[in-house]
Length: 393
Image (cartoon, rainbow, N blue to C red):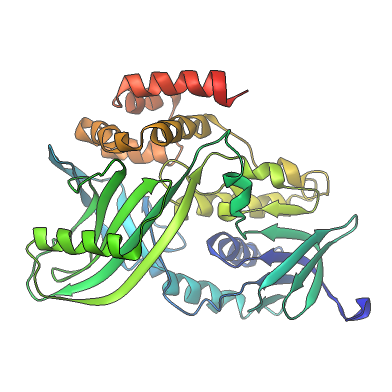
């Protein structure tokens, strides 16, 4: 293919996951980009229900119409206690992957300036005046590129910042008997055997007979598929479930790290989503932080003074919550089995609304300390010394 056949776009998104689709959708809503050509590239067609996103929120958002279930209360449990959490003024919301994809594509597919191509990206090469993108089928160029394709090696080939995984396998089950409380999600149930890790069950009940039951770990190493499924079966039996159908399965692994992905941003390439450090490092939650960051990014692009080849590296700013996350990940990296006691201390007497506000990075410094002081102090003091004297070298 010669250079005259290479199609140029103002903006290219490599990877059309949550962050890219949110950003492209908000670009349309802003009404400021109708004169700009935009290309989204992804190896996946986005036509399957490949994941579930959950997030807490106080007010309705632009995603309200695709929320399939809301819970105003949740259960937190460990071996030693159970606590029903009143989540108000928040609700815990569930969005299915396919509902999100359909909702976004319904809008962006009607925009003559936006193109989505089901092609696998094989090459990204930044030049002085543009970015070159190669796929298995074609070649493209753009003025600016937003990349959400995660490169594991960036985080995993270094030792300064701990890297854990939030890895999980879930079954959507339908039971013969009514066993679930459809008005209460199980946020974390640490009563399962920990086996030297941070392990818990996560249950999203849709009705009295239907739920997503997920076995989740915060640890370095993934398990075999059989190990996750064995634990789900044991847990269902503990709930009194003997007869059930498995309607769907989902499995995933989300990196949990404070590695500064934004330092990989260049003059014309800005990393977004997990590839840009948009995943909440201490929890693996992605939806809410991507919602915030995508809005900030659209405003950043609209600001003509901001979007120049010299300013792309200035989009992301580190804050104190990044440091809090680093302390927790350092603890779990050193002593992975401490997760149960840390989260139990936090939720045993802590105010759920304040904890959610803290995890959304919206608390004041005084509120930060109200949350942090609920946690075991010795592990965090030790971690503070490790981070200051060893990890910052």
